Length: 380
Image (tube, rainbow, N blue to C red):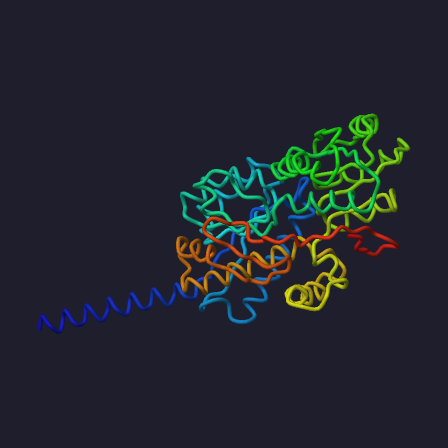
């Protein structure tokens, strides 16, 4: 009798465990997105979010990953570090997200990194990486090194112009400061001299003081580093001052660049990613990688700039590849699998991660471009 009771109890327990595993397998795998949907980063982070959601829809249409559908949880950090901490904490405690594929507000991702490490939830970011070693262990990025953006502009000035004195105008974000430092260190290698360095705030409505200082120092070009409407402000101030200077800006949404090109015409240049110049690319793996994203993107969003969304798409596809590589959804195993992803063709370039390299793009994918008659044109 006792054997029958034990057998029945064991069978019931086995069914319960199997049932629990079956339920777990059907639960969505939750992707948390901390994004600046308002504030200075809104243009790029809204696109990042849309790219993440587009990729999730594509993965789910094929059945999800390892029997589970993906679900996106998005919170607006208002482009502010403290708000980022709040939304990360909310997604960890209330939403129980499994991984973060978060946007481009570097300071916000830095501020929340401690929470993520303690929860053992990996982050795939649009921003630069945290600097603390224990935080860095759990963070990965789709963003190429900051020097790639800077060097592309310095290279153009050296090879295509007679300008040898430049100014740097940057916002206070970690990424902008990183680029500023690269410009100061690398200018001499391109035969250039940085004669003026000034910082501005993202909500500044006038930059004429900084631009006048750069002109007085003899700068023939300004490297503008930072996102948002201040790029148009700088362009208007250059024109109002009658300054004979080039404006070379960082990566940004083309919606921002259109009005700038109308103000400065052929004195305006910007760093462009491969997805922004898709038609000009040679046939090959990179163009095919972009096409996989660009076809559904254009179907849904028409001519909207694909750059930041393509990175969000990459973030999801890298995560899916890591889950499949690890054969697990568990945080530590996913983190380790990210480190082993090599030869992964994305929309920005080829990703090659290592345990000592969490910034996967190692070859400069950028070109320098301008806008003529409303069309993007590659110049370098």
